[in-house]
Image (tube, rainbow, N blue to C red; front, top):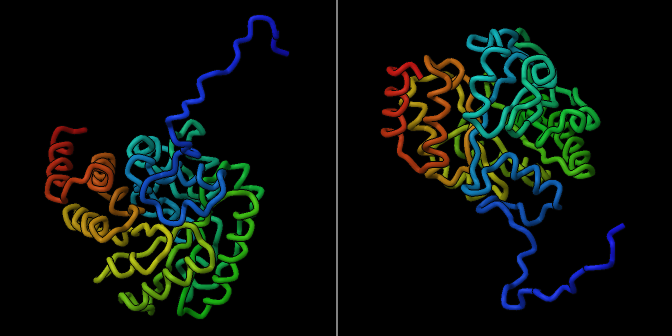
Length: 296
């Protein structure tokens, strides 16, 4: 107990300064409606200064197995931990290949289903319960949602159950728009899918870039993070990142376009220069080339 002798009476109440109520991340949609714990986790995902995020998706192995570029997660991930804001992976990968000292947000893949050998990947289940997400100190739980596929209702049920448990314990849910082999990839489809996921209660939505992306973003009341998609030349990937950010997206979740790049670390930094630094794709690409030539 503090000694009462020598205590000074409080007197400086800063009456000329309005009460702030705590800082909130700038420009992140929907965050004012979240409780303190969820806001804190969102600040681990979105840079508080820019309100944006660069995520690294390396959860491909949960249905694709050993993917090119991800053969040795234990060697790759430590190279990229300081280059991105968030690591998105499975609990098995985090526990075996990611140092617990990682100074990054953690987006934990909690849904799972058939392997790539199956023609229909839309029948997923919730494979990770909330207790394990808490043990892994997850900042978000990622659920694949298959709007328009045979397993649509199952995936919406998965999403709803994860959102409910996340709300109970203050962990945001990242709803991931899945695009199967036969599914649409049009602005109309993405407007439908992203809005449905947001209205179910997901705090973040991940989707693909498309034409009229600004309309998709405008219609979604929570932050949209754009998926990197299939591997394309570095300049083309950076141009997509730039267009997405200009359209109002809150960030990107890059996978193959980072870890299958000739220089993954430089590519991750080039992406961050667009997302957080406001650079255009041309200058970011020049940075990537200079860094690669220099062997950085």
